[in-house]
Image (cartoon, rainbow, N blue to C red; front, side, top):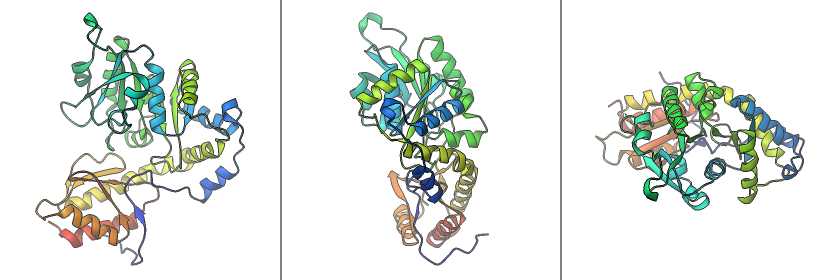
Amino acid sequence: MLTKASSEPRNWDLRSDTVTKPNSSMLSAMLSAPVGDDVFGEDPTVAALEARVASLCNKPAALFCASSTMANQLAIRTHMRDPPESLVCHTDAHVFAYESGGASLLSQTQMIPVKPSEGHNLRLADVQRVFIKNNQLGHCAPTHLVVLENTMAGVVMPVEDMQEISAFARERGAKLHLDGSRLWNASVASGIAIAEYAGLVDTLNLCLSKGMGCPVGAVLVGSEQFIAKARHFRKVFGGGWRQAGVLAAAGLHAIDHVWPTMADTHRLARRLADGLSKCGFEIALPVDTNMVLVRAPSAVPDAQRIFVEAALEKGVKLVTIYGDVLRVVLHHQIDDNCIDVLLETATTCFGNI
């Protein structure tokens, strides 16, 4: 049974988990952070964040970056040192679909996207199908890198599939990079430590502004030699920054105080999915973590627009970015009251179809 929601208008934003704002305790940590010039390697808070994330991943080194896009593109540029080479990734991978063609522009890399033959995530057979083993007759760009993503639209990639792809790529001398922008969520949902995921790849990116509540930042993790070269490329990309400890402090705070709340965020996502299903919504993808992807009731003409506009009137922001699929993203600044309002709105619009 739904709890009684407040009648006062609220401003809940479910467009993404990037919309969060630093709370007072995070801001306090940022204001009190000791800082120095990070280009000179003298910012102690940046160093502390890099060491903390490297330790969580059981990797030797890490590099604090302005964004996940920067971290991913630095990873590709640092791995792809002998063009022409290619990388294999999911057709919906962020590095392919949402990073402005950066791999082609910055790294002279041919991207080979592959659509999963079944399910939502890549499996070994998908990678094998497009993997280029050699440069026969000079016609091809050999596959030097496989990029995985976990989570993908909130769906956790099974560790068994990662293990199989990892073994295959390494047998053929290819490198693996994990876009783990939301690996924090995957780890909480699966119960698998971040270090276990990290052990299956050469490098990985962990985002701090998606679900972790930080205003800026991501961390690229890998070997000492790899990170040293990535740091050089970060400077080339315009990513050398000075007293960045004020931002790194937010990351340290998020690891201690926001990450532990993710299980409750996932609970809210499942509650929302269950409630919307009762109102005739079709669940488009498994709700493993903090994302709910649904189709509005097909029996009602223009149902998605009706629902989005009705929700906005109640103070809940939604966005339609996937055509007929509505993506709703939960985060630590959303509570049960918001879910109450959204489910009451769905019931008002469509009843219990």
